[in-house]
Amino acid sequence: MQLEHTQSMNDVFCRVMESLAFYFVDPIDPHTIDIQRDMAVPYRKVSMRFEGPHVGNVILYLPQSAFSTIWANMLGVDEADPQSQEQQNDAICEILNVICGQLLTEIWGTDPVFDLCIPDMQDIDSANLSDVLTHPSTCSFNSDDGLILLEMIVDQTS
Amino acid sequence: MSLNVLIVDDSITIRSVMEKTLHLAGIQTNMVLHAANGKEALETLGKEWIDLIFADINMPVMNGVEMIEKMSHDGLLKTIPVVVVSTEGSQTRIEQLKDKGITAYIRKPFQPEDFKAIVEDLTGFSNAA
Image (cartoon, rainbow over all chains, first blue to last red; front, side, top):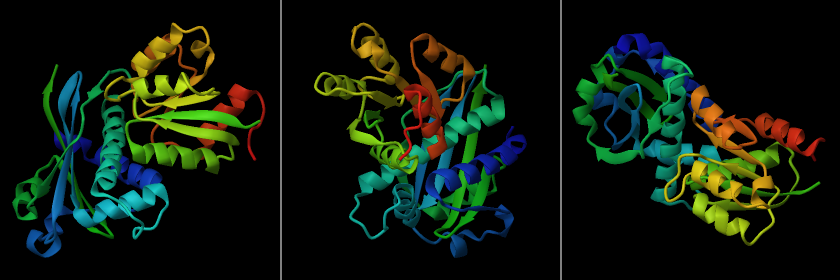
């Protein structure tokens, strides 16, 4: 599937990050990325399942340092302000929620009805991301906090 | 005219962003209250007079549709305008929500102008400061 959706993923991700979090990202060729050199920091994986005429997952892989930046940008506060991991996680889940909603209509239009599930979040060893990085369903982005990956997996279509 | 506004969303971040956006839009508020789901919103509505509700749809405990249905059975609550603020992009579902009585719809991500236009439309005049 996935190559045909790459442009939509790039467009939606850049647009949502800029408008909701004042966070600027640039698409980058994954073949120029060296995981050991460019992703040698703690990462978190945040995924959201969508169900409808098409079923699948939209997944974000972010450096942990991006969490506090995005949270602060969304609220217009200083990164040094008191904050909890829970608040940061909430901000990222909301970002993924908006990305997923926008992506589904960007790809399949406004007729189909989709249900979005509660996001799932976990720590991840970036050394294990080489398969994700080079998979055609993944888009890669440069940010001030490091590389961010956006993956969309479609399991089935009814 | 200062409004009493209730923001209903399970994300504390987005509730704060929405409140900030209302102020950026120049909308004069007397009171902005928050609720994390439809159940909390109904409890607030039982205690405070609210002029306008901005509510998400997908929420735990009680979602936005259930909240709107319960409000529709109350003679007083059904007169309060409910603006749905959601990631929902399906025109089919938005039409279903309109059939259930929502006043307007704003899609995330939103801009201050989206809120300003709807408040001006609902109040019949510019509410901007």
